[in-house]
Length: 318
Ligand code: FO1
Image 1 (tube, rainbow, N blue to C red):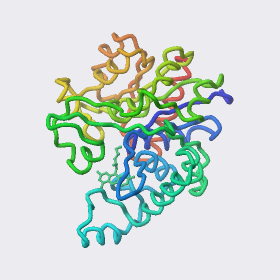
Image 2 (cartoon, protein in one colour):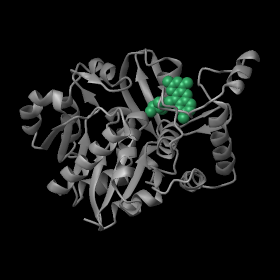
Image 3 (cartoon, rainbow, N blue to C red):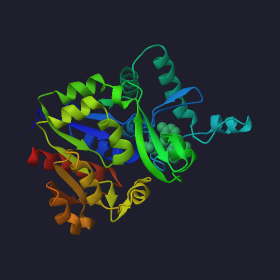
Image 4 (tube, rainbow, N blue to C red):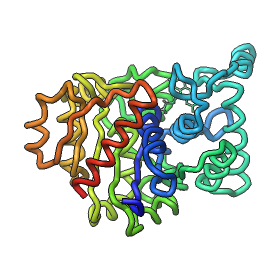
């Protein structure tokens, strides 16, 4: 329907692929992309928002195609110079990427909100689809490990996800508010469906869902929630999700993802890979509508096709 609105929740690299497809499949006024900021951190005096930047660069067509994060055609003079003077260089900040972190940091320090700064950066990158931080409040994902607590980027990048994970907490979430544009979209009568991109549920989607006002709005929703599984054939498409499931004593499969969202009343429809078709009865038995298709997104046409199928499926169950 031409006046329908779709709200997508995304983390970094995996989520950004579907977000790009959605941006191709829908007119800009019918899409809002809410991005996890639990991964944000302060590093070398800079405010870094990795997932916001990944989504922004991906949609602007300037993302590094090898890593999925950071910028294409990057140079590393700043990073090398940091190493030469014995400064911390475990977090790879490229020269081009650095410009965004410096600009964001100084605007935040001057009193602009993260939403305002993000909108300004998107305009500068000629992006018209709204890319919206989940909150303008400080929320930080803390990884609880056998050896103690770690900030997310210390766990993810510096420690290369090696520590055994025992849990997560989202510092600041309990007193955070959703960003103004997120809140406005949740109350928009045109909202047709909430789409959970194929991101890690524990560290990319949960920080968004941990904001109390989001939980309250979603419990009273009149639109369906449709998730796209981040697992294909017993393996997480990207990142430490498989390892995290194993550390909870759970198998790495799409049933676990569907169950995880459904147990909290946050799932109406579930899209998973066609190679996992045998799991369909188990997923359907949870009481969710199912749709099996090719979810591996290699090319732009894969992304756009999966986005169109996701929208059609959500429309059907709305
Ligand atoms: N991920 C890495 O694995 N190593 C890095 O050195 C790294 C640097 C980096 C710099 C800027 C940025 O926006 C993202 C960066 N990422 C890096 C990705 C990021 O930390 C993670 O992919 C996300 O936080 C998880 O979604």
